[in-house]
Length: 115
Length: 114
Image (cartoon, rainbow over all chains, first blue to last red; front, side):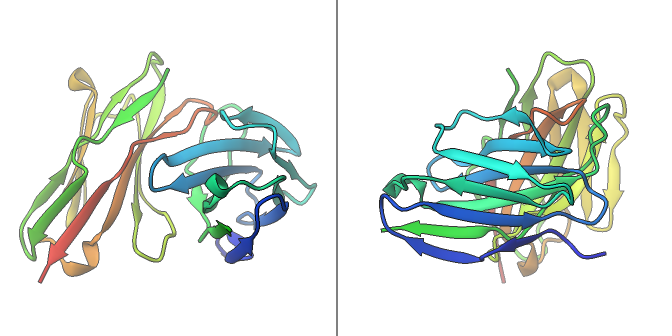
């Protein structure tokens, strides 16, 4: 079974631009979560999507948004990039039914650098 | 609120030594899940183990073992006879029963020296 894939793997943007990251979950997984990882803040939860609906959201500004498609693929968008948005963005998928939790499996991440 | 503490920021050991990584968690839930993940230099988080709050049995998998103690809210991870390939950052994580509050600890960077 193929793992979680994320594209692109590396991205360089400048302040003020916007960026879209993509995540394809493991086949059959319906939940996709996004995390931001920085040396200073560690792994921070951004949001989770389940069956095309945002089910949970972390404490991030509205510049961070996401969506999930009917095939469970998810995209994350960051608008008006700031230097502090430079981070490794990790996507995780799980077969969460909504009534119980399952293990999250992570993709390789997208390393975003904002200049 | 849920919280995970990994007091050891960095640990260095020499190959073949045993090493224990500590994890202490806080939650008000009666049903919850604990996880350990490994993040090698490549960056991808690798799942190691999941344990639910009703299963306090210790687990051994090869050189890895986990000690879950609800009385002290701890879920420690021991690597026996460490190897250079074990060098990575190890994260302990906590989730509620519905997977909607997934919290990671700050991680412990393990360096295994040859």
